[in-house]
View: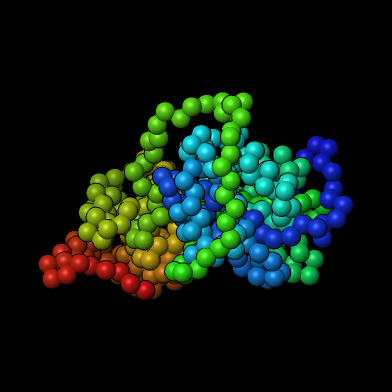
Length: 350
């Protein structure tokens, strides 16, 4: 647990109930990593027979509150204002902490995105508690209602289980892509308490004049990822992967060694020190299968590996293994996909 100066232990932890999840939004929709938090939050809430409560801060929240209900949220608490249209650390933390103070949740979860990490620390300070960051395993002791937050340590070679026994809420951030997005249930409703708020000007210390993403894609959102490694032999190999990804409607990923040698930007990196992905289809071309990479893609629904080495480690984790040179196999795949698309659209199902 992150230490906090002069933090006061909670006298009556039994008074703190329910699991809270902060929902990050972008362009009027809940981001995928927050949907993952709904899934694990619901699992924990059900184990202790409590409610899953989601927090929304922004503007025009009703459609997103409805979406949260479909994915398993029991209640939505919202702070709504035109001044909250774009993410701003100070007011977002203020309203989240205000809900915590009023409702007294036992557990508070948030996705460890750029904004989530920024927000979590401020909420923890305001709530006089600690936060376990970047968790990859989250569970609960149902008898003691203690959050079991596990995060990688020692160069990500070991998992440390962090407990927060004396302060509430028990807070944790979770690495995007680790947990599964729950199935949406059309017609499922949730209780909603969305409040129109007037934001204190002192909380708005910056003006958002526009938003331009660093890249045009988020690899963690993709249903199909085509990744390459050093086995491609050259930077130009990623142009071949780009062509295959385009035919499949996917995006290009990469192993860390391919990124380290400068063949592709780090935003494409899949692995323990990159992004964790769980697409419907993952194609690994010229990737040997080191543990660092496997951690980042092993939860994919279908894994296809292409490697000229029949003993490559990646074969152990693959549903299908193509033992061939990538420059022989990939053009043939593209050719066959184009033939199929001449008859009907290619659809990947699991």
